[in-house]
Image 1: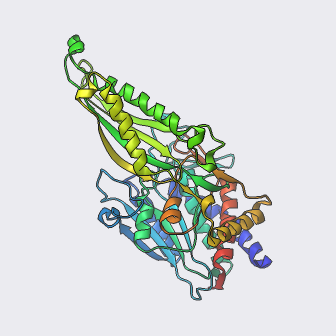
Image 2: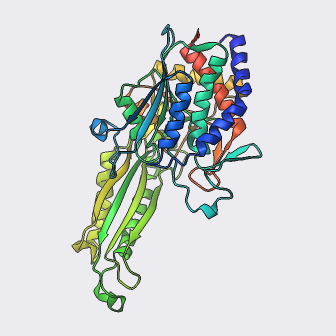
Image 3: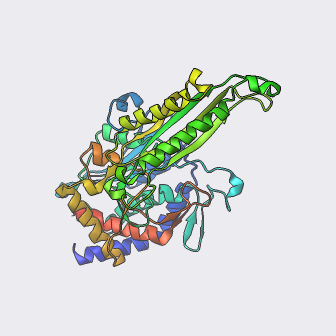
Length: 430
């Protein structure tokens, strides 16, 4: 890359950094939990339009994507699931196209009294911005946008088509990213700045969500021995699922990227509900489960084993054998994805471009990491033959209380992203 352009891009990010932090604070102030993303998406669409990008804002239609690989089942309505894409169309088409993807949805904030400050009133302290979604992943959306701004500040634009995506549903299905693919947004590489501390994610796990529904026999607690407690009936089933979890984590079952991890796959009982009255033996119980799978591990085979574990355990229980559990799949049906397994020239070139950009900004080699979470990268890597680079700023307490992002890390990622765009896409004068 021309040294003058590189210096100009780095200086442009610095010059606009106060504006970038203000943009991030505004974005964090929108409480964009699932189903409530519209105001944040309105803000994002307005910012893209103000920069003269072609803005596509549309309501996701489940019927248009349910037949596609990677679709995750949903239980609720999608009347409020809106994606936003801003498109830059190159005049010359001399470079390689790029998707800059990020999700606008955030997880629920939990009890407000467990936060040190209100989760949607972002504050900066000691170089960190606090607030729900500051790290996961609105700082990444900000870095994508302001990296493009840096090129414009230098009088340049990408010499290839670039699609800036602000999607919903990443935290529960990934159907927002899938809807972008279904709408025709494809490119030769994708960058997703999820908050993994300026490391390149080489592999990510898959995830399956399911519910287990149990029915008991209600009676007054004075006669509890003649009833069957649906909540207590869940206990042996949960124990059996954890035994399955231990088997899946055995060394012989691990994916190559996770051989160094004793417990990469985690089962989580995320929610349990049951009963109607303190003095009545509960007649029903529902518990929600999240189970991880390795890259290459079949979702369908995993479901078969999950169902067998639950049914075999139920048949050994005096009550459950006459009232077998019902299993309902909802949310994530996500395969694992390993960028490390992509031997294509495009993947090698994309990784090389990111390595060069990261090194130019930090002076250090690019760290690599296999993560025990999932991201939208799988849609590009598995279903669109597109290498997906997951590389974003350092954040802490994502999904927890007092979530925060390191602003200097966001600055570095923005600089690296600007250099990556200029290298991968090439540049043309505005």
